[in-house]
Amino acid sequence: MEVVIFVGGRGTRMGSRERLVPKALYELGGRPIIRHVMELYQATGHRDFVLTLGHQGSAIVEYFAERPLYLDQDVRLEVGGQERRVSYLAGEPQPVTIKCVRTGLETGKGERLRRVAPYLQGNTFFATYGDGLADIDLDALLAFHKGHGKVATLTAVRTRSQFGHVAIGDGGAIERIEEKPPLPGWVNGGFFVFERRILDYLQPGDELEPDCFPRLVAAGELAAFTHEGFWACMDTDKDYAALDALCQGGRPPWRRQTAGDR
Image (cartoon, rainbow, N blue to C red; front, side, top):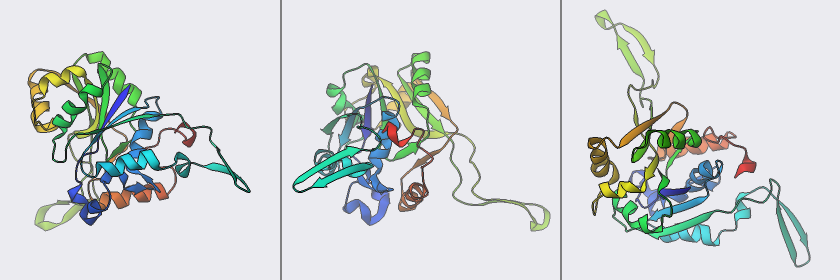
């Protein structure tokens, strides 16, 4: 099934880095975050991707078109004279299809989705942000979506406070300190399943979340799949450092499968 990945934004909360490379190419553990996102889907057999290009889109095209895949894999090299042979230690990687669609520099996600629609083949497709990672069960997400029959499913996740919470009793006495506790309620985690009918709820120039989603809610056509496991987004330089540290520490918590399933 096809996977639309929103990678057209400027990443303005990432500081000076956004002027050098698009956020989708920020490396976690030596590989761009977009590769990590794609591998979540590849691990469950979804290998057809549609990228909604915008800011520095050419850099993303160049990465996939020109960078040899073996540079990001564990390989065996046979070198002799002028001959060079490369084989993959974990087996030949499964091929993927990547459609790179230029959807505008300042375009909202809803309009980006409208502009890639002519290149979508099926009636049902995944969509996600290019900066979010989770150990989400994509098979369960898809089954949930097919079960309710609505136009759209979003994944709802829980987040933690950025600060320690202090419980204060009588006379100012501190009764309890809880470091970065879970926050109540749910937030949009960015792993979606859409029916092609979502286009009926999109107007030219729309954003996805503030424009399209309220229309879906009013029509009773949006459902939430709840995910209690690991979830994180790379919204700031601090987020980037934390995710990169998780990669450096070994198998990152969002990887549900082994490296051989890439």
